[in-house]
Image (cartoon, rainbow, N blue to C red; front, side):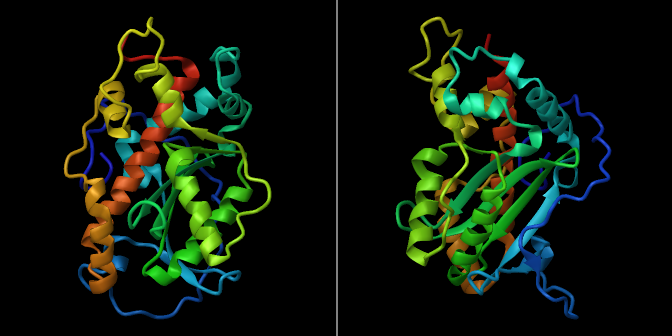
Length: 296
């Protein structure tokens, strides 16, 4: 499974593909200095990463970068399955019924997609403190989590995400059109962060899931779901249920507590929650591109 809390990994795990090519890093690392051993419960101990400097904003943030095999060795087969689906995507679905965004995805290489999910201090106008992204690089799915260690680091993670987005072919989110990207635009405008003039096409998997399994699905659909929340899709489509996952409603208070106390125990849980969301998005995209339906 994915770390400490989380779901049960599927039984048909396969070995990870070989990887000799390092994936690109975001921004650049701060100069290394000798540090004492991390304190128990500290961010460095529980969420190992490195400080990143942002030349544009003049600030910094914490970057946690991990390949799938490091955080979920039982789930590495998802990376090879994702790559195989993407390489044959144009032949896998009916273009006449597909959305324009899905057609953009089918034309991309596996490396061209950027999956994104945010964690925030609330809804509209509240700060974003974590932007998680996932991309395929060197035969692996690689997670990069941009964490603001306090409220003042929000501009730096927004700028780092803008730089990452500029090099991507298609952005993939779950409810990103209704929430994540709207809030990113709002917070970027607030801080004067330039997201760029031309953003890549944006595929929102929530919209695609609703077309196939939601109330708006065609009457011939084999089975509709009670709702199209991401964890509902996990349970019904992938037969996984999260154990010990931090509830979304508890995340803002957990972050405020971390800022006040530097106790990173709940931050570890939030980062784990974010990883699970990103990984499920990759699996969901595979079902949609191949028109597979585990409910039939």
